[in-house]
Length: 72
Image 1: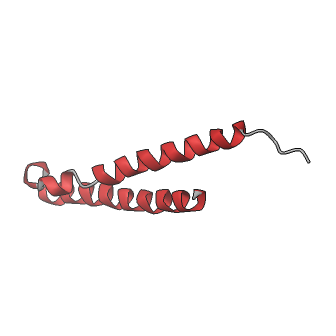
Image 2: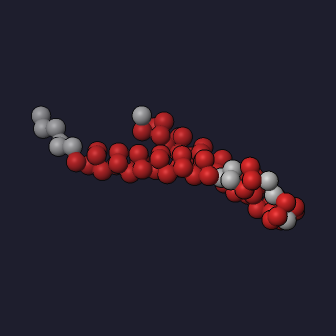
Image 3: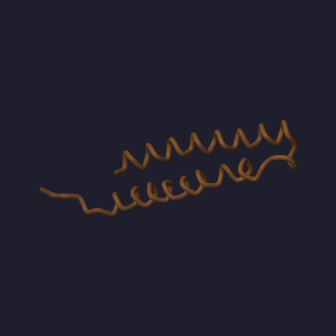
């Protein structure tokens, strides 16, 4: 599970970065007024997915620490 979440977070961050770069390129070439809302709001879904997967990794880290050590 941890490996999947980390991989998902990594690939989602790449998608987010590409969406932000595309947003800046569109604004730079077409001007802010003529950029369609789809391009403007494209980075938001990956951002929310990054928030969710980041919180899952944060909780997993501290949940793993709180487990008692197995003696035996």
